[in-house]
Amino acid sequence: MELVVTKNFGNPQSWTLESYRKAGGYQALAKVLNEMTPEDVSDLVKESGLSGRGGAFFPTGLKWQFVRGDPKTPRYVVINGDESEPGTYVNRYSLELDPHLMLEGMLIAAYSCNATLGYVYIRGEYGLAHERTQAAIREAYEAGYLGSNILGKEGFDFEVTFRRGAGAYIVGEETALFNSLEGKRGNPRYKPPFPTNVGVWGLPTAINNVETLSAAPAIVENGAEWFQNLGHGEATGTKMYCLSGRVAKPGVHELPLGTTARELIYDYGGGVLDGRPLKGFKPGGASSAALGPEHLDAALEPRSMGALGTIMGTGGVVVYDDTVCMVDAAYRDALFFEEESCGFCIPCREGAPNLVQICERIMHGQGSLDDLDLLEDLGASMMASFCGLGQFAHQPVRGAVRAFRDEFEAHIRDRHCEAGVCRFATNGRLA
Amino acid sequence: MAIHAGAPRRSTLAPGDHAKLDDLRARLADLKDEPGATLEALYAAQDVFSYVPPEAVTMIAEELRLPESEVFGVLTFYTMFHRKPSAKYVLRVCRDLSCHISGAPAVLQAFNEALGTRVGDVTEDGLFETESVSCLGLCDLQPAALVNLEQHGPLDAEKARSLLADLRAREA
Ligand SMILES: Cc1cc2nc3c(=O)[nH]c(=O)nc-3n(C[C@H](O)[C@H](O)[C@H](O)COP(=O)(O)O)c2cc1C
Ligand code: SF4
Ligand code: FES
Image (cartoon, rainbow over all chains, first blue to last red):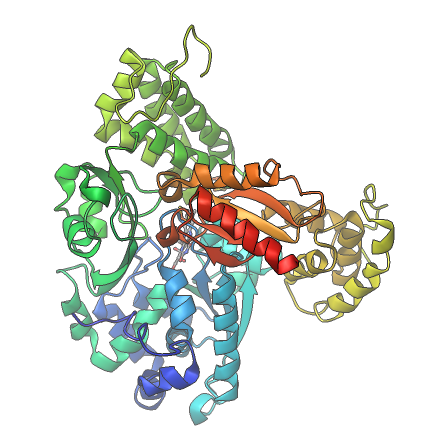
C-alpha cells in the first residue's frame, strides 16, 4: 500500500532536513509556488476529499478557501499538535519522526490561504517532539523555506512561532488553543464566528491537525484522484490508526480510511492479547462510545461509525478483552472528562462529576436500574454544554450501557462483576 | 507597571531563593514584548525555582504588563505548573484507560511504596514525586510514565523499581 503521511518514518535520521530532502522533501512546495495559484491549491485539496484528521473531518480545502476569502490580515495557519485524546498517539510519531512533512504542508496551506504568520502548538508533555520540531523550524529558516520571498517567490513570506502547552486536554479544542496561544486560560470561545474568520488574535486562521497538513504535500505531487483512490469510496485517503489496550501489538498503522476494525486489530495488531476473547473496542479515543464484537466488520470512517451511534474520532482504537469490566472502562472515561472539564459551563462542570458518581455507585453495588435512565437524562442535559468536551463526555458512558447493558444490570441486580474487577461492599458500605 | 500590583500572596520562597528573582527578571526580558508569552514566562519561573512562587506571579505580571489575577489564572489552569517546590524528578504515571487496563495502578503503587510517599509528596531529599495524570499520548508504551519529559514504558512494578534505582544512580 502507498503511504502518505508515514512514508519517511523508516529513513535514517528521518526528522532532519537532509534526510527529508533526500526523500524528495519540499518539492511539492516548489511545485505549488511555481505552477499553481492559491485557488488551484484549495481546489485540488477539496477535490482530493482530504478532511480534518483531528476528529471532526471538516473538508480541508474548503477551510483554506474560507480563510483566503476573509479580507482581514495578517492571516494565520496554526498546527494543532495538542493531541491528548486517550488512546491516541499518532501525532506524536509524526512530530518526532517527520516534522518537516508537516511544515511543508503548513507552507502549502499558507500559500493557499494567503497567510503570512503561523504557530506550531504542541502539548507540553511531548518533549522529544518539541526538540525535533524546533530544530526543523530552525533548519527550514536557514534553508529559506521559512522567512521572506520563500524559494525565491517574490512576496511569499511566512513566519512560524513554536509554542508548547502545559497540560490541558481542552486546549486541543481550536478556540481554546487560540486562547492558550494568546497567553490565556484555555477556555473555549463561542462559535460562530468560526476560526476561518475570527481565529487567533481575532484574525482569519486555518487551524489544522498535524496529520491533515502532513497529507498535503503528497496530494500536490500525486494529484487528487490518487489520494481519493487510497481510501474507500467517500472516505478518501489514508488514516494513521493506532492501537492500545488489550491488543497483542500496540502500534501505529497508516491504512486506507475506512479499514475495518477486524483488519486493524487482527491483521495489524496481532489480535487480542494472549489470544483472549474480544469483548469490544473503542473506535477513536475517550470521546467515542465502545462497540461490541458484532461490529468488527464496520469501517473505521466517520459515516459508518456515526450510523452505529459512535464517532470515528481520532482513530485511536482501544481493545477490550474479557478481563475488562465495562462499568470500570466507562468510569475511566468519566474520570478523564471530570478531570479535564475546564469548568467554564455548568452542564459539563456539574455533569461530568455526576457521571463519575453514577458509575461509582454501580461499581460498588449501590446502583439502581433508575441510574441507567438517569444517565440518559444527564446526557441530554450535557448536550447543552458550551463546547465539544461536554457534548461528548457522556457518550462513552451511555454507549457502554447501550452495548453492554447486561453487564451493568449484573452489577446492579446481582452485585456481580464478570471480569472480577469490581469489589462489592457488604452491608451497604463501600468496599 | 502592573495594572494591578497587589501585595504578593504569602511568600513560599526559601531564604536562599530571593536572589533567584533577578535570574527570573533576566529571563523575562526576552519574553516582555512577545505577545501571548504568559505560559513561557511561567515555564521560565518554574525552571528557576522548580515551581511558580507568588513573587514570580507578581514579577511576570509587572514585566508582561498583565493583571496579576490573569497570570495567576493561567498558572492554575495548566496542570504542568507547580505551585509548591517540585522534585528534581517528577514521575508522571498515566491513569487513563489503555494504561489502566494494562497495569498502571501497580506501577503507581510501586513508585509510591518504594519512595514512601503519596501522589504529590516530594521525598525528603527533594529528588522524587509522583503524579497521577491524564493520557500522555504514550499509549503504545502502556502502562507509560514520564520522568520529567523522558518517556518510559511499558512498565510494571519491577521495572518501576529499577527505574528509580537508575535515577538514584544518576545522582550518586
Ligand atoms: C475537546 C476537544 C479536544 C480536541 N482536541 C484536539 C486535538 O488534540 N488535536 C486536534 O487536532 N484537534 C482537536 N480537536 C478538534 C479541533 O477543535 C479542530 O477541529 C481541529 O484542530 C481542526 O483541524 P483538522 O480539520 O485538521 O482536524 C478537539 C476538539 C474538541 C472539542
Ligand atoms: S463543555 Fe466543559 S470543557 Fe467545554 S466549555 Fe463547558 S466546562 Fe469547559
Ligand atoms: S492511556 Fe496512558 S498514555 Fe495514553
